[in-house]
Length: 182
Image (cartoon, rainbow, N blue to C red; front, side, top):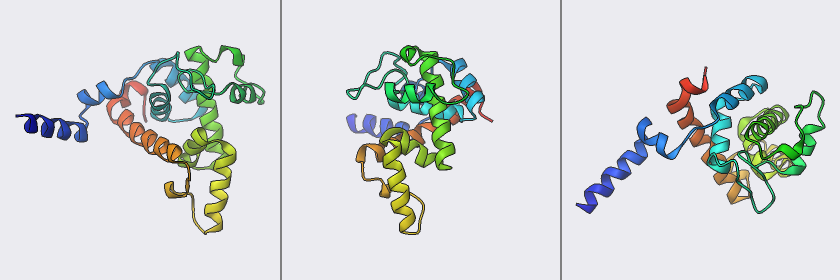
């Protein structure tokens, strides 16, 4: 009987039907995500996937490196964002507030996507840092190719990219209507 239960659970987990996915991949702050997706042009399911991976939608999340909130923004990154032309109108000291955190994180994702012209590289830079990502892109280009997951030397960043990409697909499929996915 245990083998049957484990086999059934494994099959359901792999198939990830919507009713099951909603348990493992929650969604909160839909209006805020949609607003900032529209303002930045970043796909709302990508924003949701990053929030899920970074904090599991816990606005009180804090990392050992000092990252804050839903999208785990470092205070130094928030200061950088707040000084950019056309700034967000938020002070970095409000980073723990969900609305502000999602605004900063969405802006930063847009910035990275624009900078690298590639969402996968942007996701890697979001986790591994811009300086590291720039080096990885340069090293891959020197080998005559675009950056692949295998070119990223940090196991944590490779896992982050894979996890966000998988979650993005799930958020698109399961919550597309709620997120206003086009």
